[in-house]
Length: 175
Image (cartoon, rainbow, N blue to C red; front, side, top):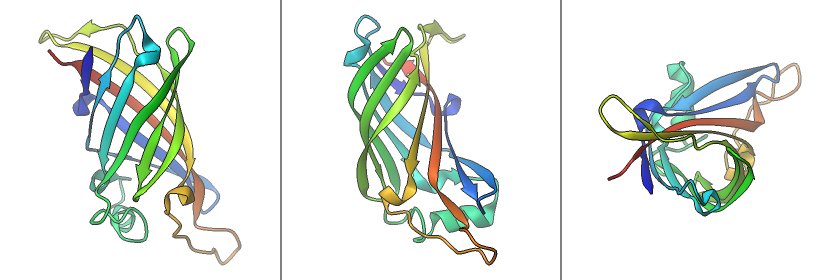
């Protein structure tokens, strides 16, 4: 069974420490991708996804402009973040560990996603079959070449290294 991401019912969010005191949250507004999934063999699932880096939204225009610049995502040079699964392990019913190649800023690293789901198929009011997943992971932004930072006058740094990522994705079955 093949499904595609329903971007209007999906989110790709992140949080990162700011000034070593509080987390700043943001997300990306534009994503696409596909899932091959058979509920009788979850370990055979395959996922490919892309996120448009220019669609970053932290609810602060000046910060978003800085994140789009060459200091961070360099959206002109690296317009997409991609993920391609390489291995799926069933942890328990409804719980998967998905390994895959994450590419950010032109650098690819293996990451592990903790996944809840996929849910059972549900039919929406227009007759489309849908499934959903939630996934989390944590990465070090420096592993992906996102190294910009500033020292604080009182000690410490402006931007933390660890980025928590949470995904809530709804898929539509392709016919």
